[in-house]
Structures are given as structure tokens and as C-alpha cells.
Image 1 (tube, helix red, strand yellow):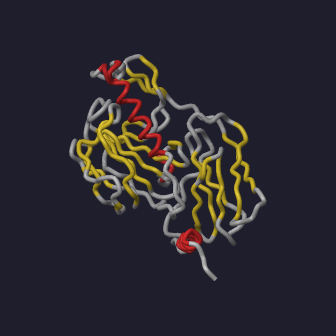
Image 2 (spheres, rainbow, N blue to C red):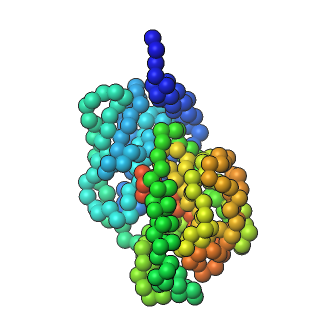
Amino acid sequence: MVYSMRFITRLCLFYLFLLQPLSSYALPQHSLVPGGIAVIKLDRNDSRPEFRFRGKPILITNHKNHYIAIVGLPLNLKPGEYFIEGYWGKESTLQKKFFVVKQKNYTTQHITIKDKRKVNPYAKDMERILKEKKRKQKARKTFDRQPADLDFELPVEGIKTGSFGKRRVFNGQARRPHSGMDIAADTGTPVRAPAAGIVIETGDFFFSGNLIYLHHGQGLITLFAHLDQIDVTIGDKVKKGQVIGRVGATGRVTGPHLHWSLGLNGTWIDPALFFPIGP
């Protein structure tokens, strides 16, 4: 019998998926709020599931011999009932799993930016900003079927100065909510990959300064912004703990720090949810 290369590739990925360590990592925290994560145990483990949330493919992991869906919940999601839907293997019966999202009120943060151009860009800046926005959107939507590495560590040692979801007011003007975690550290402090991944984007961006995007598998994306130095290039495979850059103060900042974002199924979620709750 002759098999196509596509079939062989999918079969290899399936067995690699099954061979993942089943209990060597903790699952992210289950938090059914905007900007949170839905951790949903699926009903079967006899074939590879492929599920979606609001039309976007989601991360599926095998944990302790059970398939688990890890779903990013957009920050602008309204409270109410939602569901993931998908199929098991080649079966044609659509399956759904429902969950309820509750309201969460985030605080407001007022920030003074000395470089007023970073708050109100000049007309000549807009072409650059729009091009960079497209590059960011493309990186954030990256997805493949490779097993995802969920065993995360903090990328830098420092003081957490800005939490995810805060409403941002720059120089008295409201802007988008904070899409990541800010960690203050001295310029030049090493920034390390929180988990194994592939570099999918780098560059000097107007608002974000020097930045890096990593893909850790199945749409699990991390972003590192305001770097002083970038030590990797697009296409590099990095190991957990590998230095990828250095803390800086590039882009729209008030001082040296790392802005770290974490994305699932194309949306930014609270990075703190990938770490155990402290005592």
C-alpha cells in the first residue's frame, strides 16, 4: 500500500503527540474571565482531536493520559456562555464543549511618556506603524500541529511593575489595555526563552522597540519587547533558558524593563496564568 507524504507526516505528528511526557508539567491556571484561559478536559483519548474557538484552532495537549484543550479568552470577550467545537480524528460528527465566562474589572494605570511622539505619532510615522502592525498580526496568528511546550519559566529576573489587562492612559489619553506583563530590570539583563520554541519575528518597532516573537507550538506565542539587544534571528530554534536578548528601554517606555506577552489562538492572555498560584 502506498501512502502520501502528507499522511505519513500527520501520522508521525500524531505519535509524537502521544509520546509527550504526561505529567512533567503543570497545566495553566483555569480562569474563565476575559484575558483568561479555559482549561477543558475532553471526553476521549482514542484519536487526535482538532477543536476551534470562534473559528480559530486551539491548543490541545495530552496530560496524564487525557486530552486537554487550552483556550485563550480575548480581553474584549463579554460575559456569557461560549463553546469550543471540533472533531475526533476523521469522524464527521461535530462535538461541542460549553463553558461560561464571567466579568472581570481591570484597574486603570496612568503613565507619563516624555517622548510625546510615542503617544501621538507624526503623520510620517503612520506608514511604518501600519506595516509593523501587519507583521505583528501575522506572527500572533502563527499555528501548527506540533506538540506545544507548556513548561514555562519567567524570562527575566526583576520586579513586576505592570500587570496584564490594566487600562492604559498615556499623557491623559486612553489607549488599549495592557497586553502583557512588565518586569523591571537593569539595561543589559539577560532575557531567556521561557520554553523551547522557534523565532518567528524580530525587529525594531515604533511602539515596542526591539522585539522578538517565539512560537512554542500550536499557536502558543510569546512576545518580548523594549529590548536593548536581540541575540537571535528568525528561524532559530531556541531551548528553554537560552538567552535571546537583553532588557532595554527602546520604543514607548518610561524606563528599562521587559514587556512580555503570551498568546493563545491568536489572542493575548495573562502570562501569570502559566505559573502556579503563590502561597
